[in-house]
Image (cartoon, rainbow, N blue to C red):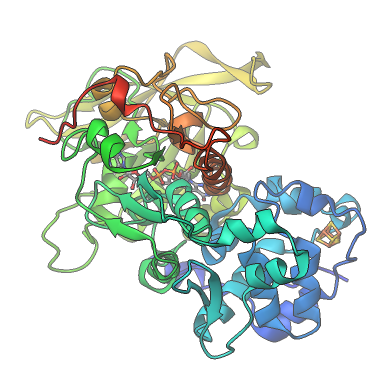
Length: 507
Ligand SMILES: Cc1cc2nc3c(=O)[nH]c(=O)nc-3n(C[C@H](O)[C@H](O)[C@H](O)COP(=O)(O)OP(=O)(O)OC[C@H]3O[C@@H](n4cnc5c(N)ncnc54)[C@H](O)[C@@H]3O)c2cc1C
Ligand code: SF4
C-alpha cells in the first residue's frame, strides 16, 4: 500500500498568498496512513528521533481511533508536536530510518504527528500543572495525566519527587526558541519555578521570526503551543536582552540555575564587493521584517522591499524560505548556489515546493560582486561559473571556479542566506563563559557550561541546526539542571557559583 498523499494549496494560488501550503491529513487519511505501520518490535524510527517520541505507540493509538491517547503519548517526549510535525527534517530522521522505506515509502510520521497535534488543539486538549506542579490534562476530553499515571504505576519514590514541587527552586531560561521552550516545559513539569527571558517582543525564536507563515502558521500553531507551555506554569518575559537589559550576574543572583538557549541569529555575509549597496539584506533581516513585523500585510509600519526581481544566495532552508517569501511579495526570484541540485542542503520538500511555485534555480554559480547603479542601489549580481571537483571534508563534491566564466544576473535585491553564527552579546559580557573560536558556547555531555549552574543547548552550542535537535538539547539540559538542583548529600545545597564573582549587577 502506498503512502497516503497530503492535500496542498494549488502552487499557482499559494505563490500569491501566505496561507499554509499543506492542509494536513484528516482523520480518515491519518487512519489509512497509520494502518500501514508494522508496529516494529525494534522500531528504528524511534531510535532516529532526537527526542525519542514513542512513534509506533502513538501510531497504534491512531489506528485504534483514540487520538487523545496518541496525543498523550507524544506529549511525554515533545512539547511542540504541531511544530515538529510541520518542520522537522523527518526524511533524514524518523522517516529516513523507517523499515518500510527500504523497499517502498516510509510511514509519513511527521504528517501523523501534525494530525494528532492539530486534532488535540482543535479539541482543546492540553497539559497543565496543578498547584503541586503535577502535570495533568485539561479540556474537552478530561484525559488522565500521563506523568501522574506513570507515577502511580511505577511506585518509584525518586520519580515521585520528580513531579512534586519540593521548594520551588527558580530557573531562568534565556531565549524562547525550541531549546528554551523544551527546557522550560520539562523543568515546569518537574515542579520548578521557570522564567524565560526573551529579547524580542514575541516569544518563539526562529519559529516566529524565521520560518514563514506558509510553512508554520504563527497564531494557529506557534501561539497555541506557546500557550500550552505557559499553562505548565512557565513565565515568559519579552523585551529583555540578557547581557544588556539584565546581566548574567543578576540572573545568577536571582535564580538557582540558568539555561542559555539564545540560538545563533547572527547572519554571515560572503564579504564580496558591493554588499553594502541598498537592496542587499541578510535572509534573517528579510524574514524577520516579514514574519515578526508583518511587513507583508497592507499598512504594516515596517517596510520590506523584494523588488521586481530578487536573487537569493544559498541553498539551505533559510534560502528557500527567503526565496518563497520574496516570490509571494511579487518578485521574480532566482536562487544561486555554488554546487548542483543534488547537493542542496534544504529539505527536499522545500525545494520541490519552491520549484512548483516558480522559483528559478541557477546552480554552480558563486557570487563574486554585487553591482550597483548610480543611485547606490543593486542592479545585478555577478557570479562565476563553477564545476564540481573532488569531494571535500564534508563528503560533498567541491565547487571549482571555471577560469574567466562570469554571468551578471540583473536584479533589484540580493538576499544573502549563507548561514548564521551565535550572537556574542552574552559571552562578551560574561568572560567566565567559555566559547569556541566559532562563538558557540562550550558545554559538556550534560550541557553544563564553564560556569557552575549555567547550562546551554540548541543552536547557541551547536551552531545553526534543527528544531528537534534544539528541543532535544533543551530536554537534556532540563534533566541535568534537575540533577544539579537536587539537595547535596552533605545536607547542603549546590549553589550557582555566584559568590565567586561578586555582587549583583543590574543596570
Ligand atoms: C529561516 C529559517 C528556517 C528554518 N527552517 C527549519 C526547518 O524547516 N526545520 C528545522 O528543523 N529547523 C529549521 N531551522 C533551524 C531551527 O529553526 C533552529 O535550529 C532552532 O530554532 C534553534 O532553536 P534555539 O532554541 O537554539 O534558538 P532560536 O530558535 O534561535 O531561539 C533563540 C531565542 O533567543 C533569543 N535571544 C537571543 N539572544 C538573547 C539574549 N541576549 N537575551 C534574551 N533572549 C535572547 C532570540 O531572540 C530567540 O528568540 C530554520 C532556521 C531558520 C533561520
Ligand atoms: S519503523 Fe516504520 S513501520 Fe516500523 S514502527 Fe516505525 S514507523 Fe512503523
